[in-house]
Image (cartoon, rainbow, N blue to C red; front, side):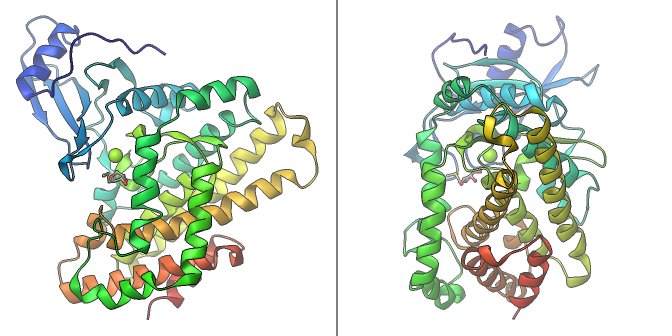
Length: 396
Ligand code: SR1
Ligand code: MG
């Protein structure tokens, strides 16, 4: 994996990003270049540079040495840029159609130069606008199935897998998830952020021993199960999409973890969008959950049966056991994500963007009930239709 080290780190500005693009020979000589910093995530700078004549562009993404969402008081490793570019390259070796092309990366500058995806839209934004994207779930199901299978002990040489896992040890970014997804929202922690009106509902979660036990089991899985290479932050803000194309971006949280985690995050963010919609408009979100799981299970099973490198793969019942646990875990992880996006540090526009406060509070209370029961009742789930059932049961 080619990541070079050149200059000393400094945060880029728009003019400096243009100079860098020219120095790297990314554009023809004398091209009239326009540049805008368009990063709207929690952590990084993102520069979009376009040749004004040919309209061709590139993205230069740069990690900052702190979490942008909080400020310089929260230092954060620049190594995440190397993790991100290596993850994109690894994913591209299995599913090039679902990730942006990486043109160049530089460890010292903490940058990844990649394909301009401005022809597509961030899935969260489009879903909030009411778009449905018919192929989104088919593509994400295939993305997760192939990246999970081929990076697992069943899809690659088991010695090579250990080396790959080593190269994706990502302690600082995993700690963000361990804290913000699995811990802080379940306790009275200073990072939490919610409307005063929700305090009684939130305090009930903080006193809920049953919930604590199940959240602790899920956190333990996240901490200990080095099963497959995960994207690690597969929410709908990490996906560019159109009617016929899907690209997964931002794998700076990539690490070896439990197979159900990426699916759970994706399911949760579809549910968060459903929570912001009227009953009549929710169906496409549940359909996406069904299809993601169906495609995942079918592609993963097919690869398992035809390409597995592990002697035990043909043992009757093993594949079914792997799929069952992936599903149950995904339901539980989805519950943690729904709760943390409602009362934790990093919210989502799907819920926060509900204009009328009363409606917003109704949706958020629903989210808390839904998240809690996803975590506690995950083992009762027999299929994705149970998401619809639980969503309806937690409405009031
Ligand atoms: C401090 S980072 C907050 C969140 O933003 C990222 O996208 C991850 O979801 C993380 O938990
Ligand atoms: Mg991100």
